[in-house]
Image (cartoon, rainbow, N blue to C red):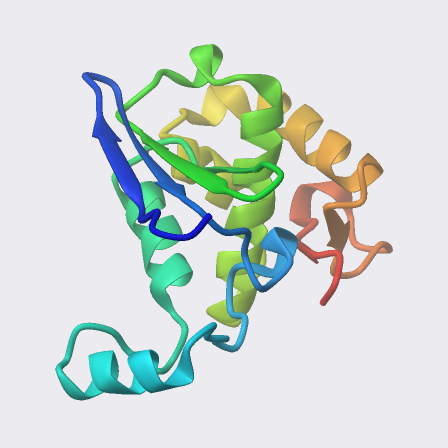
Length: 170
């Protein structure tokens, strides 16, 4: 692995960034996680030059930007000794692979939690740019995210119409 640096590939429909290391944190906690550095001296120097920040909000900003532009959630793939992040261009909801929809649902819950809010059927429809008539489709996605242990109801006794959700770790 020595001598290798990040590789950035730009395609018509996506950007792929491959890093020759694995993340220092669990990707399920990539939103709102305190920063960690492999080389604190280099990180300190980069902060002083204004190249990076100390807050560890980079992933938060990436996820929020993807949501605001109605893009699929960034895909993170971890291999033996590398990590690949793919940021996609606009894809219609029906063409987003189901696992990627679940990941977007989970990240949306994380972002809402950090903002002091909760995921709702309405907020997730807005996140995907869907109309009110798609509430059944989103309800099924939320139900599957709950059953897979990604999110949980804030108050399980709330009427289904007013149900809101938070990340399972919250």
